[in-house]
Amino acid sequence: MTDPKLARPALTSLLNTALNDITRIAATLRELTERDGGLLRWGTAQCEALLARDALVRAPSLDPDRTRPDSPARRVEPHRTTTSNEAVATTFRTGATDAERALIKAAEIAPHPDDVLACLTAALHCARLHDALR
Image (cartoon, rainbow, N blue to C red; front, side):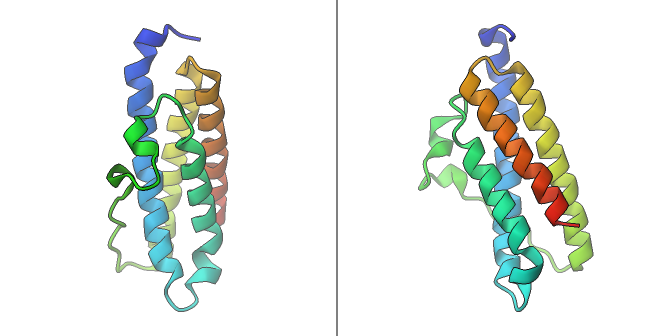
């Protein structure tokens, strides 16, 4: 483990960035699932994005305002998209992979075991999100 005082700002930044990305993907997938036939195409991916978000908000190093379900910080605008399903899936696969890598890096520098668990669990769901978007 690294020195907690040195790791804290970098860890918080990684966690916040990953949470923003995952939350935005989940919000957009929610809109896509509400379209005709969208649940079949996007439902599994939406579920994995929500599981990743829910795992990540358990990280003790995350800003407490971001972990409350009713927090304005947890509300983000979904991507507004008029592009094809394949373009959306490709964009979100890239986002899921980026979030997964950030979460693994965060787990490596996290001083608290609960942070490590939250990061690795969220990273697992990001990998599953990537697979669900194929």
